[in-house]
Image (cartoon, rainbow, N blue to C red):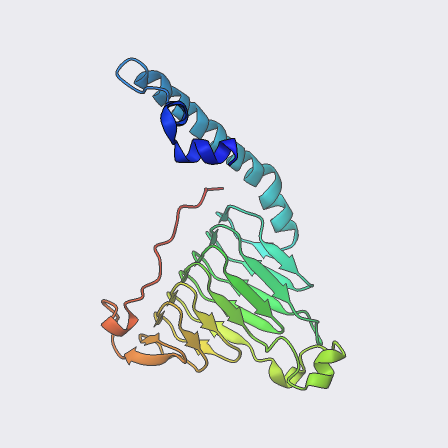
Length: 255
């Protein structure tokens, strides 16, 4: 029997005392009491200050300038955290006061005549890990809330024909259709919006929904595929069918 097995079992007076001693060493911690608490509170504040200062400096001097260089236009008051991942060539236009939380991504398809475009309106919030796959046009209105993990596609991504996929051909034009998201739209966590969809003003899309058809204004949709669960008039609250509500927007650092 190895010494580690004997120590783990703690059999006999010697190995029992050694096991108790080992436990005492592993459970020891620096005491935080009335004497040491002010010191550790100060050290905690210093730790947080250094961390937040580094995050601000990295965003201000690196992430934001690099991202702005990839955009055709950016309105004043941009707020962002991590550097978005951008693949392919396309046009990005952001309105005033757009907020990008965490790390989002934009993937442009192989351009047909003219560059594909992603346009985001004033005051819109885009959550962590949101992804846009753009072959022609994705337009997001003003004052929208896109919770974390929302995905928007205006194309299939690959040809339907297997031989064309194997040959590495791009998505054919007939499989690309613009997506339009109106003003004041709220899209819940992990929802997916597919090609050709128009979402009307003030509509709400429940979490994890898959939107395959147009959504009228002032309605709530939920499910896979998304169906209307509440229609007509200003929306005051989510219905039980849409209770898997979008997450609250997390904090973002101001420009």
